[in-house]
Length: 59
Figure 1 (tube, helix red, strand yellow):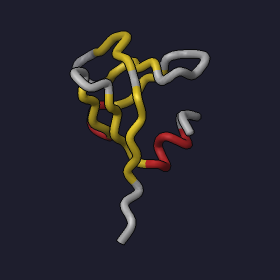
Figure 2 (cartoon, helix red, strand yellow):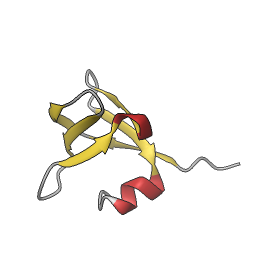
Figure 3 (cartoon, one colour):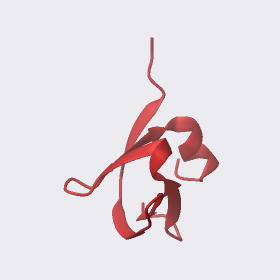
Figure 4 (cartoon, helix red, strand yellow):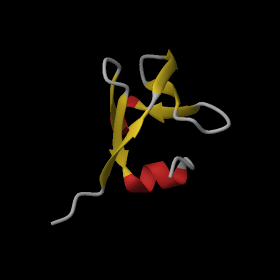
C-alpha cells in the first residue's frame, strides 16, 4: 500500500498553539494546522498528506 505522505523542506516563520506558518519557497508563507502534519524544526522537514499539500498549493 502506497503512503500519501510527502516530505517538503520548510522554514518556520511563526507558530500558534494550533498552527505553523511555514516558508516552503512559495510566494507567501503558508499556515498549516499542527493536527494535520508534522514539522521537524531541527531538520526543516515538513511531513503532510499529498492532498493537503495540493490544497495549499505546495506541490
